[in-house]
Image (tube, rainbow, N blue to C red):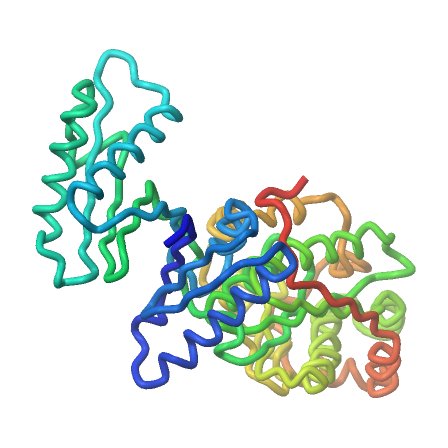
Length: 402
């Protein structure tokens, strides 16, 4: 046994006869994400994987804790199973932890031993092993106290058939299912606050996400496009392969502005976006569209308007944020790490030629009548013909954007 990373799987543990399919997908994703960063060895067992080798384990742990399907990861130190040898390893482990810990003022440091015997043939039960190791640690470090409820330090011990593992903490992952285990979907990616969160939520449900952005050139600058690329590069840490399509949309918006009723502009933009999305989704073999819409957040997201916007969608439209308030979406974007990119002050195409008094309860008949003035097939085909495609991944970027 060697120093390694223990990766624990999330919802995969709840699967039945098809569980092996999810575990194989998880193993494949882990391998693809680690491959660019060094030589790693992987060993898969039930509901978990051990990662070791010559590569940078700290970097690997940072990558692994971001992968959908991962419950948590731990940096582990190997030890022998025999109780006295295991106690010596626990004492050495505690010594390392103490050297890196600032002692509190006015009270002694408190610790707890958590022991789990994965090999039920081991002679000591989990609670007995924890008590034995705790006594040995106290004998060596009498300045410490035991606190089972709110300890300052925790030494975790797992006893396996081939040895034992020591670790200090479990670094939480996103949970969910491994990307690719639930098919593929196309996300209409604005790079605002909402759609990156929606894309990531779909990744944690096992969906591979392809991104489609509509850019308002020549009326909106290149900074807006670069912002979208930054979002997709950031999200690339969560799935092995990321593809971004950027669709030219400014001239189409100008056409709608010149020929259609002002109050319907935004809704007509969105319906045309869905028509383009239908074509890209067919090209990418996607099974659904994904949007960052939330009921009532803006005028175009009333129930009636959502109904008429998505009437032209040929696939199911998944809206994972549909019932969330803006404050919760912002909180999720901050936790995910996309928020600093999303709030860059570069407008997207949705701000272009905005109506002064947008319609909040449009009818399908009114929109279809307005679209008679547009050469719809030609507009859609021209947009698709000028699509820009960029591929990312598997890539890893720092945990915070700078």
